[in-house]
Image (cartoon, rainbow, N blue to C red; front, side, top):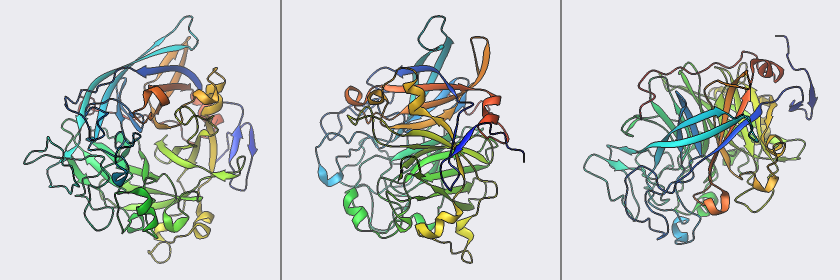
Length: 456
């Protein structure tokens, strides 16, 4: 196929390229105000600081559901305040997602071309009808047929980390199918669950490869890391989740390589695809190494451009919230067409280990240097959020007479607005020509939703 890259500088053997002829432009920045969500929960969490309905951390995952509306996902809840090291300072914060409507309008004389005003429409709590394993604290609003997931790290029974009746849940990725089914990935299992869009009830559990399982569990992440020689790294599990525009496949992405593949700081990260109808999975390799930085970076999100091309968010933990200067916040494009399913190698037993996996890594090319784009708009490195995590495409817009596709990026402020900033959203615009210049072969394919997907 004819290449459309007009300007590239190849930086490494793995063809990581910096493209200079096109890049998405920053259109708007908006912030969701308020300190309370719409869960109607009352009382205070065990840390005696945060209310049960505290609003924060909503940028861990971001999913578009049509009509200028998104689902925003907080993770396991507040755990920055030190109150109980035996549970890594986690609380029984109930897992949830928020429905947010976005008003994006042209600005005549603003610093940016458009103005963004987010509005919180609703909050949906996540539960299952199956009895869950809890630790010392059981959610007080459980009923005989509703058992809520929470962020407490001691909500588990002995056994593998992917036990679906463990009550601990650390949501990190969220996507919505055309029919309104919600899919959420997490770091504890790692899990990929299906939820009802309206009620928040878990309706399906997807079985992943046993390669992701950790066998020895602990309420303390450090102890769990030390106690395992394979499986996902504690607190570095299924960070990213994508869904193909045709709604047939989910794509999960670990934050770091599995323990047997090098663990945190390693290069060979795994992507797992899940056929939604059959549950069949395939695995591929992504190289976290950046040649210009001479080091590896963790991955925070994956987003489908079309049915085979994807964006991957790589970032450091530096910036606003960390008291440092951001260095790496980038989106890379990958293509799974022709990639090797490493789970099918070795007569179906799969392979492991960084040296064995890296030869099968997919090629990646730079799509957007977020840090540079924000700096070019007078946002200094120390004011760029440390945890840019949620990424989604949104509605097309017209600004200044030009039409743009939109790319939305959200930050996880760890429920610390006074330290890590508010619940912010950054909106970038790009054109079909930009996509061609950036090496996207088959263009952006927009998701289509029926009325079940966009209920508030």
